[in-house]
Structures are given as structure tokens and as C-alpha cells.
Image 1 (cartoon, one colour):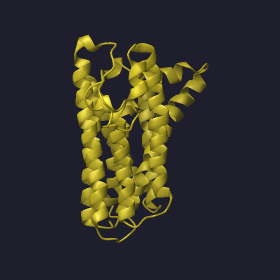
Image 2 (image 1 turned 120 degrees about the vertical axis):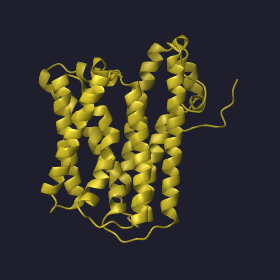
Image 3 (image 1 turned 135 degrees about the vertical axis):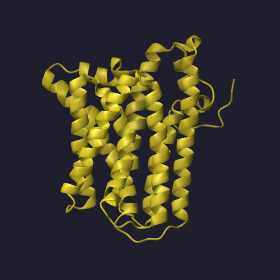
Image 4 (image 1 turned 60 degrees about the vertical axis):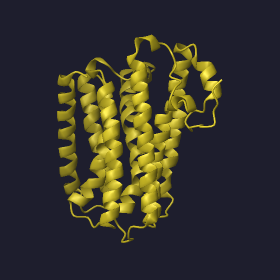
Length: 292
């Protein structure tokens, strides 16, 4: 990780977050959800502008983990009534635990501006004209993930603001789901990091640890996090369907979108992946899988 590039990205996000803070104050008469959505979209556009300046869409990578805690905190900073102080503390702890883990993993694996995510390169290179590339870049790489994450955050926003339901045992269930999910991510990330450090493993498929039981255990942990946010909505008696659209969208985005792209790439580049894929679930962790 080039320190200079990390400083540039950090300063860029600091500017964007500052802008989002002042924008929220400008829209404070709007309903919380609408206000946050507008701020989120404008923040995404600012990061997209950075992506264009540096000709590298990986500027957006940190947005997934850095911005959600900011969005949950903005109404509180501006004095919105919270449903329960204890629920607020539990939910923010779970969200920050997830965000710090994901951001740290991005930092230690990012190679700086000399690298751009291969998926972004493929999406943009498949377009013929400059206009279509810009549309794919903004809409496909930046805006759609932002909207998916926002949908996933709606149950958390509704759980924190706009009701007066006291903390209860369902809140603790929600936190446990999130903590288990993040711990699965931490373990699987470290196992993959150690595997990739060994040059002898180049071109091979990771098939040990949690990766023996699932092709993408880190994604399983990610889905548990978003499920936990939905359970927080249940704890606060927010039972509207909008609170549960996010987890469905996240599943489609991760399990159908990202997993397919990564598995297709692995099939082409790793000779041992095909046999591994036939015996290992995509995301779910199958602890009953037996070693041959």
C-alpha cells in the first residue's frame, strides 16, 4: 500500500464526508430517509469525480465501508431523536466493527492507484463509446452499489430514528448475528491473506480453513451483517417490507453478481477450481463437507 496514495484517498474521503455533513444540514427539513439518500447520492458523485480525475474507479472501493456509519450518525449529530440509547450503542458498535474490518482489509490489499479492480476494467472496456463508458462507470460501478447499500441501511435507520421502542432481546440477537458475520470475515480474510503471501500458491485455489467449506465465506459473513441490520428493525417493531428489501438486494448483488464474476474468472485461471467448485457451496458454509 503506497502511503502517498493512501493519504490522497483519506483526504479525498475527508472532503466528501465534510461535504455530506454540511449538505445534511441544508436538507434538514426533509424526512431523514430522503435527506440521507440525497446526501449519499451527492457523496457518490463526488467520489466518481475523483475516479475520473485519477482515471481509477477503485476510488469507490472504500465508500462501501466508510460511508454507512457516517449516514447512520448524521441524523444523531443534527439532533434527531433516537429510539433507544442502548439500541443506538449496540447498532453503532456492530456497524463500526464491520466497517473497520472491511476498511482495514481493503487498505492492506490495495496496491494504490497503479491498480484498478479487474471487474471495473472489464465493465468499462466492454463499452464502445466514451459516453457509454462514463455511464457504466457512474451508474454501474458507483451509483448502483450506493443504492444497494442504502437499501441495506434502511432497517438500521428506521430502527434508530422515528420510534420509541425500548431495547429488547431481539436487539441482542441482531448484534450476535452481526458479530458472528464479521468474525467469519476476519478469519476468512486472514486465511486468504496468508495463502496469497506464499508465492507457491500462485495459480492455485484456496481450499483450507473456512474456504474448504465455502467458496466465498467472506461473502457469507457480509450477508450476515446486512441480515443483522434487518433484525434490528424487527426489534424496533419496524415491520414494513421496505426494511427487508435490502437483504434481498444484497444477496442478489453478492451471490448472483459478484460470485458469478469471480467464479468465472477462477475457472479460466485456476486448473483446480472446477473440481473444488463442484463439491463446495458458493456462499453458505457447509461444515458437513468431508475431506477426501
